[in-house]
Amino acid sequence: MIITILDGSMQGSSGEMIAFVEKAEARLQPKHTVRCFHLQNLNIRHCNGCWDCWWKTPGLCAIKDDMESIYPVVMQSDLLVFASPLMAGFTSSVLKRASDRLIPLIHPYVILNQGECHHKKRYDKYPDFALILEREPDTDDEDIAIVKDIYRRFALNFHCSLKHTWLTHMHSPQDIAHDIHHF
Image 1 (cartoon, one colour):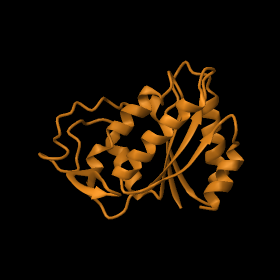
Image 2 (cartoon, rainbow, N blue to C red):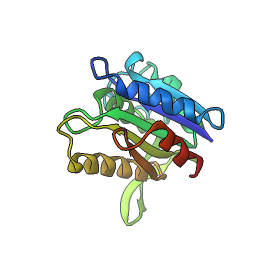
Image 3 (tube, rainbow, N blue to C red):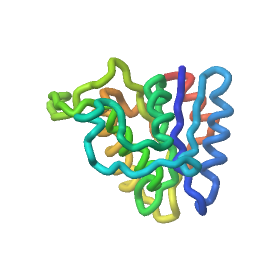
């Protein structure tokens, strides 16, 4: 299995998330191919909403930054893991920015999917999604449920599913490796 991890840890955060992701990555190899992008170290600009990726240069973002190296890796993956500490009840800004920039990978046209309007597939195969979340002191169950629901709906637009959500205070890197080995 090819696994891509988008690590949304931020400078100034506890650093526990980075260590957790690195331990999970080590547990998954050599049985799986794991590619991890530590987003805080990359140049990823905000989507400017130009829609060139849909109309002018279909499938290609007009912004030239480090996302260009992430797109092909994501599309070669079987599992895309979004990892982030929760900040103000949501994923980090750098993970949100990278997630927003995945829009070129889907088609602008809309179809009915599970009785709802969702984007048409641009490619034949998309990776399934998973989440690794680190709670902040005031995170409650509703915050977790909202993040899970947003990424579940994000997965619907990518014609895949949100396979699992792990919380760093409840699951170990060994748990994650075990779960992925048994998908």
